Length: 552
Ligand code: GLN
Image (cartoon, rainbow, N blue to C red; front, side):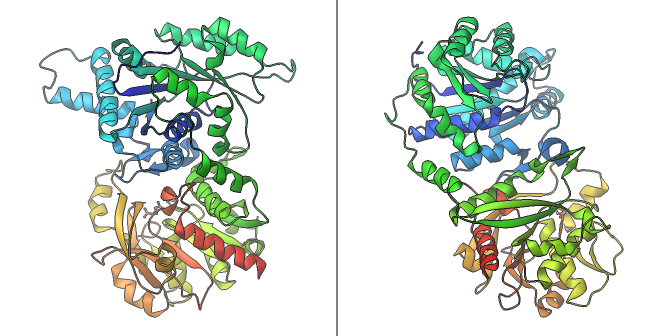
């Protein structure tokens, strides 16, 4: 069933059947990876059907990490996976939510942009979706745009997006493909893989007027020939268009696993593309091999707060941090062992901060608000005093500054004004431009967001790690090191090794190597730029110090 090429821009829509959480995002990222390995240029788009205008206002325990793009757009964590798999930055056009789409339609209506017409979900909202997708393709100048439609088939909230895809297919049938990622349960009482939910999901998709071209069959097990044939008959999809996708150890195995069922060849045929006859996976394969073959281990304790949701530990809130640690560990040839340490426990009696002694490195990630704050500060103090490599990200850098001010610079009552607005020593205080925003309760998309340049000071850990005098990193914060305390803190030994080009903002703080093997915090989020094939220089330096501590 090869679709004829029309020569236009190609779109692949990825939809999910049966249930959520089966890896639609990873499948989308993997399809992107496969097509780039075939020499095509690809951009990936995530559609989130919720009404939030961006992901920035959602609690990480409910929705996972907020991933920031260079542009400053606050997006879903899938966008992080897309960038990591593709190995390149994505643009703000590559993300949309229902809220974002509706907001533009309503704004246009208020400006009489619809010429007095009655404005409706169909066609106006749907057309806005189509326009946004076309813009993302134009901006990316790619050959193929792979679009993940969030949610599951049958959801009320993603129907307009599926309809937009249907209309795009109707207008350009040879340029639009549909991939359905479905789930095949193996109930323990039956012990057999069941195809019926997937059959029903395809019918649900058919009810939208859409027929899948490819089915990715997610399951705990490999799909056997018998079930492939059964699915083919009942879903009206050829057996060789059904890709077996059993559970694998790591998401980075997924593209290579899809290749076992020749997914890239299939997609290239369906798209009518002939870029490269054989895909080039050499670098990715080498990375996956390193991930599987690490020698020894390094134990990193993440002291955070977004862990407990009922009985579950939701590490999704720190997804990019974990991945950044992994990439550097693999790069250095060791297996990372990550321990979740709840900062709140260091405030009561449930755990003693001295348990950090058993860790080779301690990391305090980004965060907001008061929960666990003194626990984090205790952890930082312990890491400093016991010379355990420490890496602080955003809040982790601000609290490192507070700890140093209190316990080394002699400013006993030092704090961030985020927690104590009346502190005697506001070493961390609100950015001037944020004051008015908070007063107006203007919380959405209003932090200091996205990529900003940063100059590095010579003869520092940061400068040595990056091997460059100027860098660009992504930010998401409202507070900063108070300029009034820079001199005092510097005199006490805190080195501001990264500063904004106008010298106003302190972007990196560190201790001299003579004082501590690795004590460094960044106001930005380096984890957002760590990639499998280019691990982040600061994570590399942190992990290296942790490995050295272990073997010391
Ligand atoms: N709460 C701090 C601020 O707003 C840190 C933010 C973060 O860690 N992303 O500045």
